[in-house]
Length: 223
Image (cartoon, rainbow, N blue to C red; front, side, top):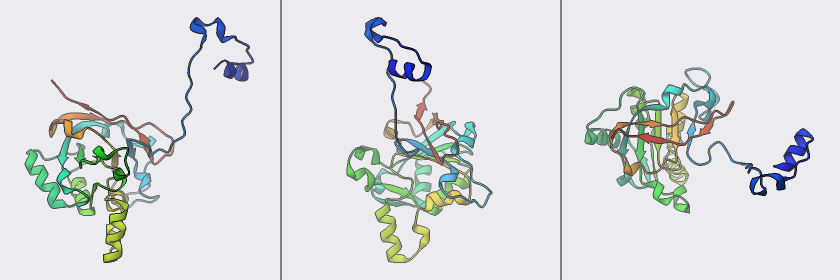
């Protein structure tokens, strides 16, 4: 950091004069806004929404990201799509219906593959009707422990080639063109949480004009 001081301030300073003979560390990072656990903004889903201009991550209301939350365990689905019936079944199983602005998180079991090639291929994602069902309840933030809230890329493409139905292509993302909402992707440790009765903090980093922002999502559980 002594070199930076000389470059920016025109000051010569010998680090040997400092306690321990060193100054401070300085890290430079190069990564996408979708690296690691992150929040997708409406502008990620498309440049035009049926509700108007999709907002960027720095424009989203903070009160969306500190809310009561619940976990739906859909880990038995394996790889593929999660439909409305499966979501309704799990809501009934936990005995709690998500309320408007609640954060709903999907425990797919995919996080156990993090750091391996299977993390990109072996998980389940919401289909369009299932996404709409949660949005109908007033949910505006949906999280997943998987790489994407949609089904794996290969699964979607094969289904499209077999059916010719464009609705199977990124349905949970493209639902955000009809109604404004955010996704939190690549969560972890959802299997350690209660099904409901806690809050989640997942404030996104405020990157100007970006379609996503990193977050350190934390569950707040009252003892």
